[in-house]
Length: 322
Image 1 (cartoon, rainbow, N blue to C red):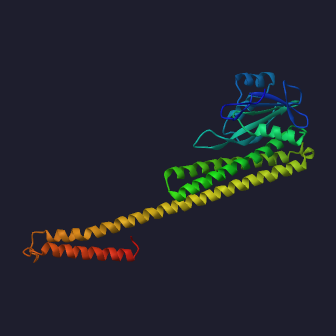
Image 2: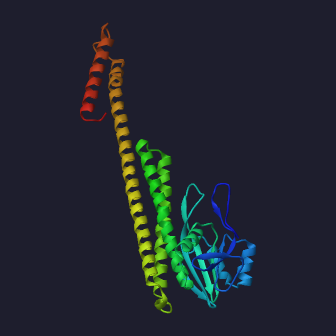
Image 3: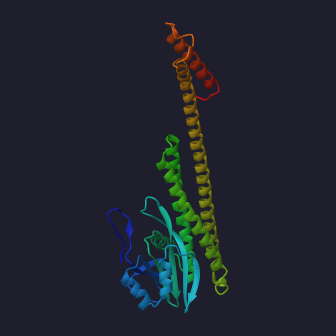
């Protein structure tokens, strides 16, 4: 159950791994009481292990599998399910970042985390726990630390989102194209996912924080850290969303203004071209006009057309219609 790497240097986890808490999370070869079981993207074998050997409620498993499942706490037959939403980097070009449900299921000496997607959060927290010699007291302490870790990863991904916003802004300054505008829309969609998930995680945190049965056992410093990181992640996501919204509105105004200028220029050119056309039409009518016998008639009409058209150009330039 070691961590392997694929050809693109992305981390890949074994589907099922066991960890014990000994001055940090250490991987062990098999299950022991009060160890932590981590399962990512479970296969049918892992599903059978969870439902038949550990006997976790199948409804809990199905809830975690739902990509749109909301954060919540649920208790059934002594089992406790806590679902939070965590960020991941997606392979979808149209949605570079999204959020997924991560479920924590525990009862007595069994604690399982399940997610149906690969994440960086678990591996990062495992290394962090070893580096800081973190001791996880109980299952709720573990949930709070996962919430803290997920908030930190929200902030990390938000920094990358901000870089994408700056890149799109630089490209738009050079040329306003559909590709750049679509990039901004994709970033806006990511921020909507982040903001919605962070709000739901905050509601979940407040419910956990106010559980009377466990309230006295909580580490107050940990509660404060989770609250601060969640608040900072929400504020950062809202700030970036407001900046992006303002930028989109500004570029929408620029595009509208450019369109108005183009239409004004095209209208001005049409008016200028209409002057000699009108004169030529009047001269070409089959009625006496005093110039039909003159050998200088055509030159007089050309001169009048040039003078009137030039006057029109001068007038429009003075009014800044060109």
